[in-house]
Length: 335
Image 1 (cartoon, rainbow, N blue to C red):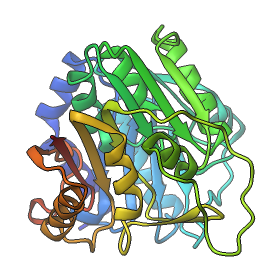
Image 2: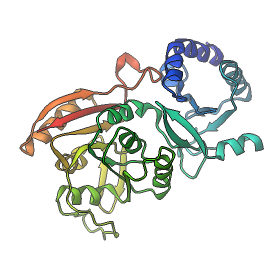
Image 3: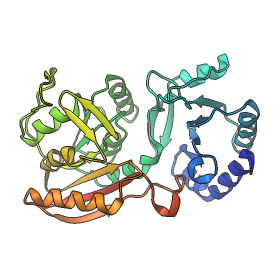
């Protein structure tokens, strides 16, 4: 089946979703999730007033890209930006026409449920500044932040933190190591006039979390520790934990397959009694039930218990095989 046919089928399936998105003032979403919908490694998204086509396994031919663009512009006549990320390092490989390059490198504004977010389809990083499959997480946080204190770990461009502030949070602390990502986070806060509620801490997550949890910062054996911001021990009403699959620093190793607890333990210690911690794991091979059970065991080892839990599944623009999405999100209420 041709890419043109597969994309047309995906758009038709989402017709009701598009109508609802328009009513909800949302103009950023996925329109083709290739791994599930027929072309592995090909994703097509709408980011505000631009279509974004990305290939992760194989470069599109000129003819294939033209077919995709024809279908998309017939749906909504917007510029089509193509990012070929099929190399191992996932960096963008291809050049664009001067007109499209200007669009791809410009700071654009889009909306999700009426919240404004900055986006840039090409920049010094790799992704367009907002992970669209995390929409359900932003919705949950917005709905559960009224008069709450919120800790947003691995905050990236602070989409979760912005949603919390828009939900009426009294304090939002965003923690990320990237100054570039936090700068976009500040822009998001400014776009929505919630800057006074949001704090931005540029720090490795390990020292930040351990200080907030009242633990020693420590570090990896024989590693000299870089400087880091000093934070007071603090507990929050809502903690959002969304680490990358794997990362290594002098302070520790993030490993979502083998050691999620290394981050989860200090995060739960930073969560108030009666508070909620939202945990995310985006590794497909991690079994949902086994991961959940390991979280509960970790809570119980700290003499606490999970009194309630809610699974948050990505929206229908991110279909999955047998409803088993690689991105697993669960909200745990702790005693």
